[in-house]
Image 1: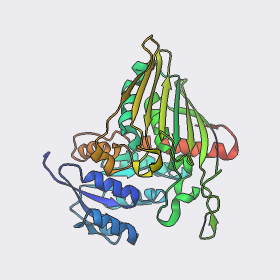
Image 2: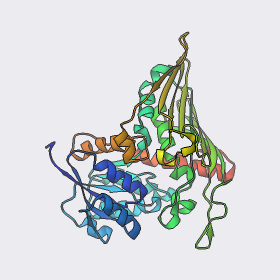
Image 3: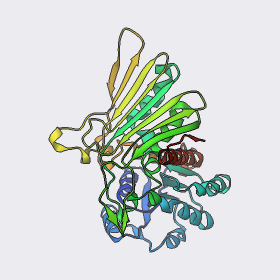
Image 4: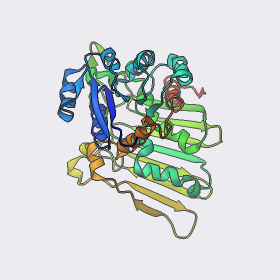
Length: 364
C-alpha cells in the first residue's frame, strides 16, 4: 500500500501551518484535502499554496469528513487541548500536533487519558530533533564525549513574530516563553541525556521586546531572555541560554555536550529570510568534534537541500519530520515524539516559568 495517497487535513494555517503545507507538498503520495482556518487573511495565504483545497467552516465540519487519513494541528497554543478533546470524541485519526502540546498544568490529566485511550498514533511536532546538525550531534554525542556531564543549549535570535490575535504576546495564551519557545530545547535535553529532569532553576525577564505593546487594554508580559539550569536523574546537568533580541547572531542555535572523553557541538543558522542582508550570506550549519587527542577539533559542514530550506524556517527539519510521520500514518512506524515526550517538554517549561517567577528551585 505504499502508493496510497494520504489525505491530510490542516487545523490552522498561519505562518507555521503554511510551512507544514509546503513540506507536505514535497512528499510523495500526499495531498492536503481540507483546511480549517478561522482567520480570513491566513485562509487567503493558504489558498495560494493549495488552490484546490476545501476550506471547512468549523472544526466540526472538518471532522465530519470521511475521506481524511490524518490531521495536522497548527493552531494557537492555547487551543490545542480543546481541539484534541473534540477530535478524540468525534474522529480519532492519526495526528501531528504542533508544540507546545498544552499550556496549563491542569491539562496533565487529559494528556494522561489521551495516552491511555486514544486509538490512533499522535506525534508531537519537535522539529529541532531533525535539524541536520542537531541530528548529527545526537548520533555522535555518546562516542564523542564518553558520557555527557554537561549539556548547553544557546539560542540567540530575533523577537517573537506577529501572530493572529497577538496571542504570543501573553503568558496566558502561549504558556510563557519557556513553554512556547523553549519546549524544543527541553525535549532535546531529555533526548540527548537519556534521562529525566529532577530539579529546575531559572532566571528570566522582559528586558527589551514588546515593552510598550498593549492589546485590548492589556500590556504584553512575554519574557525575552533567560537562563535555565536543569539537574537530571543521571547526574548530568543541562543549561539553556535564551536571548530574543539578538538579531543577526552568527548562529541562532548552538548546542554543546562535554564528557570525560571530549566535546561535541553543533551550530545552526537561523531562517534565511530573517538574516540581516547587510551582513552578507547566512552561515552554514556545522558540527564540531573536539576529542581529547592531539589532532584537535574536527569541523564538518552539514549540507541542507536548498529546496527544503525554501520550504520552511527550520533547516529542513519539518520535511524530515513529515517523512517519518507519513510512515506512521501508513502503519509502518510508531511516533518518535510521543504524547509523554510532548508533555514532559511542557512540564519542564512550566517549571522554568515558575522558578523564574518565584526565585525558587522547582523539584519535578
